[in-house]
Length: 271
Image (cartoon, rainbow, N blue to C red; front, side, top):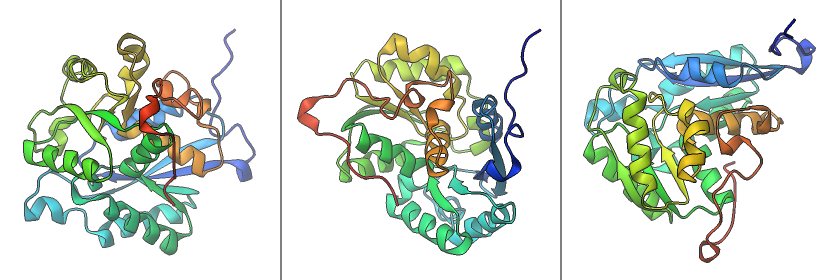
């Protein structure tokens, strides 16, 4: 008889870790993938709070969706569930500027008492600690958003050596991009021999590809959902290696590609 998989309820109730995820309203990918990643992890549960995000663009309507007051309201709802960590599971700081998420995470901590992170801050934290300076970029975004992402990373000292994007604006439509198309973009970018490939978007179904693709391309994949799960587990005081089968970033504290000695080593984490 096969033993049952561990459950979030296997541990004593006082020892459970509750991970809160701020979720774009039109995202249908984040919740099922996050829960699948945590399925075999005893004592950990994920909880989701939505606010309205329907498009990714640089116009006034698109940028206005990411007002801190709206996100803080959603974070306070997660605080009612006594979440240990609250993560903004979105990538808006990629084009708004990294300081936006730094400010948001400070405000979440002050408002709720929970530790906080975001997809972009978690991605950047892994870049620093793994010594990544040359990276590949895959997104579904429009060209102007992609250029803003590349420029913000350049200003922070990270060189995008290859990128692919799909030119899509509607957030729900990102979830309809097939895995074959995502895999093709990742393989194209891998041809430039980056130290890591960041798939920046929490509505693309890229995370399930990491375990299969990484041995073939010999480059670690930093998916926006996966990096938040990893960082949230760390902030909750847990070893992320409890997550199995979702890529090299979970294998150890250092899931990086072989280091380029000219590029330096890991540095700081987000607060």
